Length: 513
Image 1 (cartoon, rainbow, N blue to C red):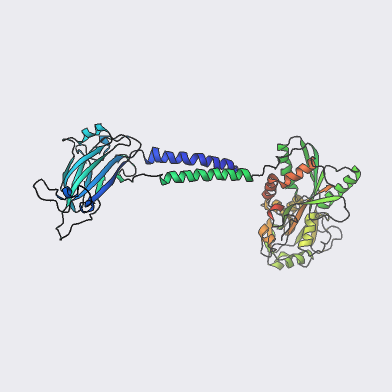
Image 2: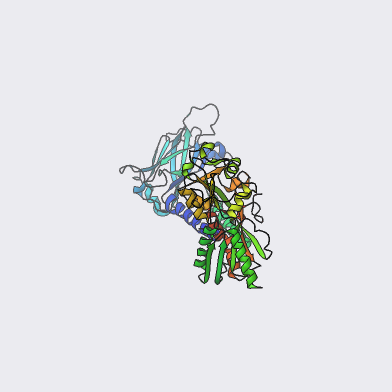
């Protein structure tokens, strides 16, 4: 199923933001606890402050001056999308502490809660709340916080290392630990950042949506709006000629009729030569008009039909087919010519099984036979048949290789499958569908478009469609020809093992480059 690009882009533009929003707000950020160290400085850093002198005189409760005093301002916040209750903290039920803050290399001299986002939060820091400090650690209580709520703690500290003659100006970062049950990831409290500008995620989403809108504009401007929809035509039409191409024509005509029920198309395969002859005769009888007939031929028409116009439809691959009793699956071109010249009468001469060779051919007007003679026999004609049942000679047929002919592709395949040692040739799609015979490689190459296009596989022909004169544009004849070269017709041709001309490097001549 081919989904239009504009629909794909529209779905992306809708789905991606919705998924991103669900991930960010419903899953990833549902319950989240964060902190941010807004200040971590020493008295030395505040030397130019108007309070520098007073700060340098800070002392412990016992009157001792602080050693290398420093100050830390810590912000704790609910940065999720749902409320945090006292029972959400990942602590034992009897433990009143929710968060601990350690200061490596420092000792807490004092602390104070300096700011709360709402006045009712102050009750959470009462004498029985669990708020305290001990040595180098501050213990913060389980504070219930609504979405977006926060509080700040200011701590005064001193260095625990011995003085070395100068003031210490750098300390390790505070270590904040705590968690939320059912929070993001492991639920651990995470360091946040101050958002003074647009977040990266928001910028990325804006750029993505801008790209989607731009892509939709480009698709709209470059889309081919001039192509008309399928033009259904009514009337009757006869498809004749090649039996090798008949399976494609049957499926294509049935598909066309399903879409255009007022069209009655009949497939009457015979041979390529007979089909072109009948078309020419019908056109001459019709007078100035164009008969509702399309003849198909494996290869170009013979001379003598100046009013019959040809159009390349597809690139057909052919293959040799052999009875399973022959014991061969690969023949060189020289082997093939010796076989049809009657120089090889038993498959054991080619290291096959001890079975007599029997050659099954097509009628002289067959396009498949003409392709075989042109591509594999070097233009030489096949000798005439000497048997009707492909097993015993008829009349004075002699004792040479048994030769017989069949008028259709299916009849040839049936005969090869039923006759020990039989060898014939067929259109690839029809032969590949059979499991009662074998297809034969030629010179080690299987029948494939790649091998034929590189001149490694020689057995192929261009399939032509013929009309008597140029059919009217609105006629069923012209409509069906367009259908065969459109997407649906091309898919049907491919499904039968052949290739539409559009698949080749030079679709105009529809043959290997």
